[in-house]
Amino acid sequence: MILPVVKYGDPVLITKAEKVEEITDEIRELVANMFETMYASEGIGLAAQQVGELKMVAVVDPSVGEDPEAKVVLINPEITEESEEVEPFQEGCLSFPEIRFDVVRPAGITVKALNMDGEEMEYKVDEIMARVFQHEIDHLNGIVFIDHLKGMAKQMIKTRIKNMKRKGEWDL
Ligand code: ZN
Image 1: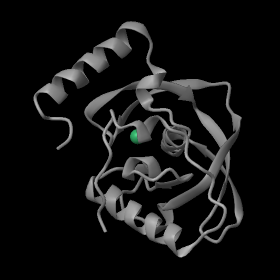
Image 2: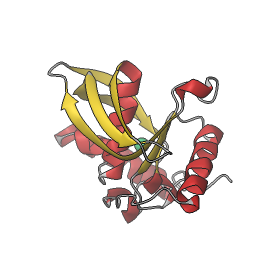
Image 3: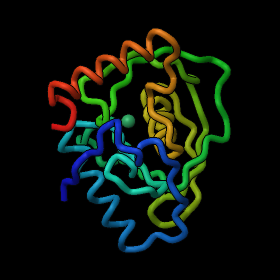
């Protein structure tokens, strides 16, 4: 089932999610719905907060449904290592329609997370995967990508969002 995507302004997006204690049918259904919702919006990552659920669950697929092996479900993910090297990369977010900008983040990371069988997995990722993982793990901790901007840059984005809201272009 395709779920409505929560837009920035909803407090759920700035609230830390709760850890998943057990992979129940409810979690399996949530994950299936999150993939469906993400593909419908042509996204490559989606966190549970973005469909209004405060659970530590994120789905990632940089192939946008083309390659079944590219699908990753991150449950209770935690970054355990970050490269010293950082790089800028243009990011977008389904909760911020049409907003894109460069975010500087570590180029490579190691992440521990449970998979759908409740097994602890370790992912060493770089490039696009490192980018999406960090963006989604931020979401689960109540952090959105504009939180990485400072000063004028953040103000400019906020003004743009305010204008879009006024014109009714935000919650569509
Ligand atoms: Zn996002």
